[in-house]
Length: 321
Ligand code: ADP
Ligand code: MG
Image (cartoon, rainbow, N blue to C red; front, top):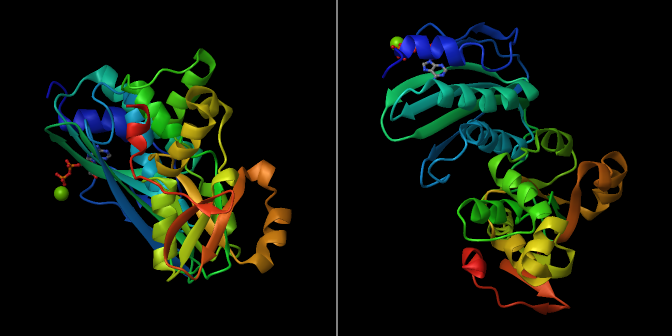
């Protein structure tokens, strides 16, 4: 590499994230020392993004940096956890300063927004691959899981699923969109918003929670399965962005909302008896979430349209092929 590994780390990553008092020893030694308060469970997650698999070749470096952290923050949000620290394992074909500066700016901005310190990592040469690990905490015993929901619980989703899949299709030239919709949808793929504050606030309300990374229907099904239940989604209640509806038309937009990936929204169940209090404390219009269905005794996932079960093919990406 043109830059030595130590110069690269010093220049781009030592001051990349937030500064935190609980980082006893950060980047520079053989490992980080983090002081961890009593009464908390440590919550840990890692995720890898591979060029050409998880993002298109030649993606904006700031987006790669942002997404590599965002996907992990979203997993912590789904646990109701507060993120504190991150580690970055970066494999690069070559060390190009402008690329690294933009990558670090994208990662660092999101890290500082959530007060996450970058406390270590590894740097190697090879095909572009970014692995981030995030560590955080929840008060002992209070983490949200996929498994706590019961038949009759209402199911909610944040944001407007499907937008990111349309944004990726735009990036890859598989879709065209009206000018006003195009930038919005691309940004939903390139710079997703992990719902960290919502996840934390859902502790005490939600009986189960999952983040939507593989598609709403599939991920709602995973939550239901883990909870020993099934799920019924209402086609008419699926939230759609204006941009997605304007780009695909309402019919295809709803199908993509069910099947498209990469949204990093939260899907969560709430017992009916707690819904009024949820909506009073976290007004849906402020917190941007909506009821989309209900957990059922009957296993499996179903979508009801005008009261009848839809036949659904798992082929979201083909809808605009
Ligand atoms: P070692 O030789 O002990 O594996 P390295 O020379 O790989 O250590 O790393 C030196 C320090 O820099 C360590 O604290 C490590 O955690 C940190 N580090 C290495 N690469 C990165 C990176 N891409 N981002 C953040 N920290 C990094
Ligand atoms: Mg070492």
